[in-house]
Image (cartoon, rainbow, N blue to C red; front, side, top):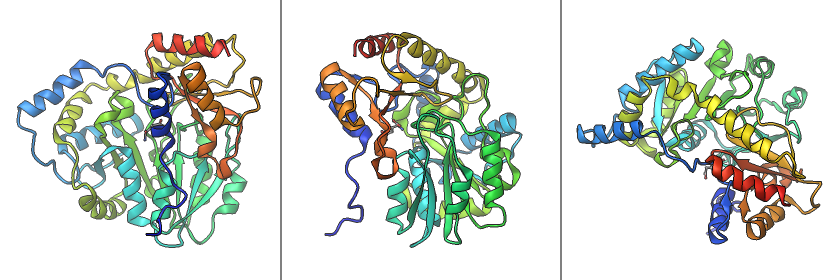
Length: 378
Ligand code: GLN
């Protein structure tokens, strides 16, 4: 049979984690914490199981969790989403993203993505017969040239996918970026998919510019988020999305036949855990300390860094060390130096190689020290 995704192989995250395991390398490639979730959260999920939350959750998600999410948007952004009609719990942000794209993108619709782009966007667009339209952001600062974006918006543009804090670059979009997006989409039918999975990981006193803060943008936006990123349990695969009622109605038509509903005891445990907002509000400081530790430890190395502004990723440029392309250098680093990272070219248009690797610093301080020692020796 002819492949529907002829260009797609195995994701870089699976590939690099497997290579790290084979070569017993420290794994700073795939983004996941190597420390434990809060035991209190584990207890809450266990309690939910013992209390009998073991059958299907409601299709759109546990009402307790949707209510907790609505409360968070009210408290943090003074933004109102109705739990009944405007919030749906999903199997991670990945399922939310796939479902949003499936529900709206038709054959020949154009979808604008900013590169380097997280790798699940493009295949989902292609599977629907949509056309990914790339706006390439460039190292070292990855800022957006809005004139380029404006030039790429056509009458066929169905959706624009944005992601701040940005994986893989660790950059943030400013209020001006969001205002510009709002202005460009004004008087159009464009849907914005705002991937905000790192909303609670923002550094140096900056603030997260959620799409829900801009009233006209909010009207056309899906916001996706992930508890895996926020509460250190990427393996649970629980996330959610928010959108105005009319958009969410279409989303749920697909969601109900895609997963129907998501792990019930985890949802109940997360709902109870979210009653204490400090559980997510302290995350920026927690990860800023890790970023700072990692950056101070590699100061003497030949890698160049612009400090990450958010996410738990730090990109390092290595052109002082070798001219090797980033995929080859990432493999060499894993096999020879026993440290795995993610090459950025795989997320770029035409595999553009800026000689940068992404390192995940959601790791214990001991792991970061070991990794830095390796980097300083190269
Ligand atoms: N989001 C994680 C990362 O960027 C990986 C998730 C996955 O493996 N699919 O590293």
